[in-house]
Image (spheres, rainbow, N blue to C red):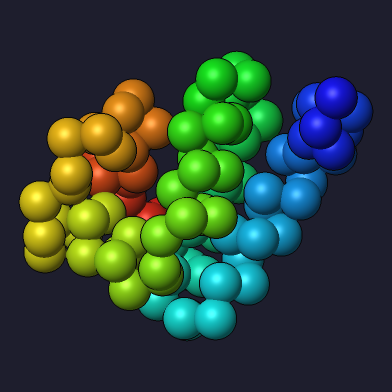
Length: 92
């Protein structure tokens, strides 16, 4: 059993929220932090997997470019979570 499998879902959500708020790139912190606050509480395990894969395996500038539509999203990452991220609008 992996560490993530042993981690309860609420702890996982908190860890992913923290990771979203402190990416190392301010624009991405703001975008992903707001997105995570809004969506992580209702994400299923599968959606958490998709989101975690994005955070763990791709650079912050690349995630930002996909999210704001600056670059096309690769087909293998064009998931429900990515569609939500692309549609997310920061509160004004």
